[in-house]
Figure 1 (cartoon, rainbow, N blue to C red):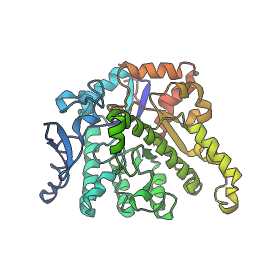
Figure 2 (cartoon, rainbow, N blue to C red):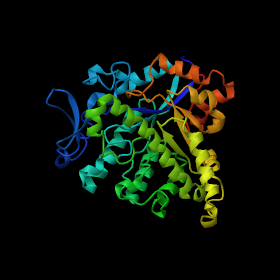
Figure 3 (cartoon, rainbow, N blue to C red):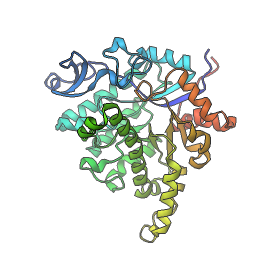
Figure 4 (cartoon, helix red, strand yellow):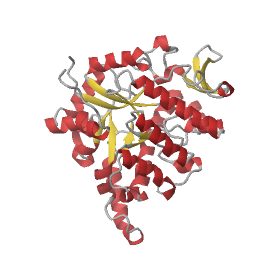
Length: 385
């Protein structure tokens, strides 16, 4: 039996080509996401007639890169799309469980807004959640689905959480900036029913990077001046820092004061920036006498973070070595982002762990690699058998 030492809190599954077209009513099939080929013969996801992304961009681990992604499924690591192959990879790596996030619908399900049809939008979200549940059924102890939300309809979003909790989902995926889609700001009472159902089921709420408005995409002028890969590198780091903005919003929103049991996770955004963010927020909070007009905020932002928020890291080596006490050992989770272009893969996983955590004591190491995630996601851990 493998020795399992890791729970991986951020991975992705490359969606099957017929995920939506095989499941929606015939009248919807021309509008939902589908795989076709572009003018160069490359397999591409389309939403209606609009290309979304190259199929292989979600699955470069071990076989390609952002610049040279695989083309079709046969070119990918099989664990990118096949559940049994994923479990075999996890066994080889000593990973007991993986938390799973989407690709095609966006990292906050925001891509479905382009359909501009409430029934179609809701159907696409529900179809994805059902498919993810079925994919995870290969071993529901180890493959952990997170519920995508039709966040543009609060009643439908709450209903979807109820539905997916019954299917075994382990968390809720929510956009970190609902206001960028014309929805109420994060701290608005409009969202209270969502926070209430999250607390009812003890489900953490995830802000995955790239969950906000992505309409700008890669800046065309920068593409011409900087080059494609430099522009992408800049945008990738911008996404990390945008999650800092989302957490700033969260920590001043009043949500954590109203719902002291709720948990939030900043996914795929790293942890090195968190100590500065918390120090800056506390400084501004005190210097601007925020409590005089907001008596509901009876704790410092850093104190709300310590009790309610988690950060995830993967490639970083400096932050886990030097800043664990500043972020909080109880607030750090480990991820690999498999099989994305920014993921760590194979021996690189253990190399990052070694260089980041080899000076930690055993209790801290186990919290970060296992214990925090086990508790947060209510994971059934392996028995001796």
